[in-house]
Length: 256
Length: 270
Image (tube, rainbow over all chains, first blue to last red; front, side):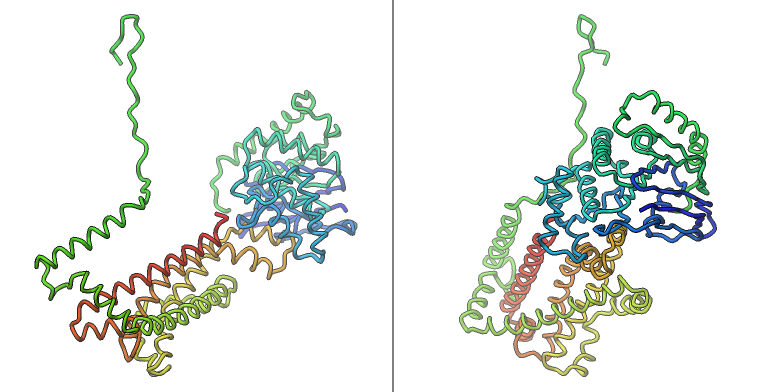
């Protein structure tokens, strides 16, 4: 299943936040959206998943999601969004309980995603007992349990310290190698974008417009930390963004 | 810093400690000692005539009165009558309060209509309405239960919708993003999220219930701790009065303890 964004424009009251966004997210591709803070990238992601309605324009699903898919467009949030009163397995169970699947199958799915995210021994832990990285792993397991067609990730690593971020980044790469998931990944971290993105969309400062789309053809497995080519791309992205970021930094915040 | 030893390295002096404090801990032993000390002082004062028995009877006399109450079997009659009113009134008031509070927390129409109404009625002392309740619900159990019900209803409503307002919006959005039904979001995300606030509301409403119980029982009740206190007061039997007040205090402590247990059980995830 592909996604296609057509002429998306949005404003909160008088403030224009997004202007004429056109973008395709192809199956098996990770699309990274980067931009200075307040450029509307999180808003755009909420629109892609149907949590917010654009003032004009539309988000189209091209083709049908796979038949066994329970929740085609599935988010991973920056703040993990785990229920503190449920254990790890309870949090995963939560998103399965509303679907018509038997208890045995549900149990099977939970065991499977916990194994895939190496969380099996933390099944009955409460979120407060887990580190930030583990919490985000639980959120990833929860997202995988509904067999999404597209993963929508809203700065999933931004709340973590840099070592944990490295580890989780490797996990995301490994997972992609194995499962070839489709994803839209919003971040303000350029290193994350060049490490994960097949396509990097640079948004300008408010109102957010597509400034440039950079495609990286190097396979994810070859993208190591000290890669000259990636560093060149990252530098280029930074040059594109620097002035915008500086201007955005000086702006008064008047909404959200 | 100018003190130097022979070889020229500075002597050094420890950095003064200025952290710590502001963290009161409850030490289990202090409260019983204080309590026993106070009662002992009171007893001593009464025996030496330092405290006139007309002003305040000795604790031993109050205890005598308690033993009389116990041996005559009246204690259980008073307690049963009071507890019945208290439990029915508090339970119904809390239940209705949670339901109405949830509606205010979830629906715009309920919020716009009921919230001002609740704010208008909440500050009225419910004791002032007791004569009205007697006309409406009769002079028997009805008016007494209604007073407690009304008194506990409003704080519960306010605690409940306050709790719902404070549920993390991110969690609700997460529920929506996974396609959970509206009912599931309310049952599995919003209500558990509001539970801490609802339970602390229950703590307050339990204390209010006991206050109103006594007030309601002071009018036309044959049995009940409030009636017992009123009777003791009109006979100037201060020893019985102290006994009645002590029973109320114990009742309050037991309620608070029970709610504390409920908090421990339901909020063990915190």
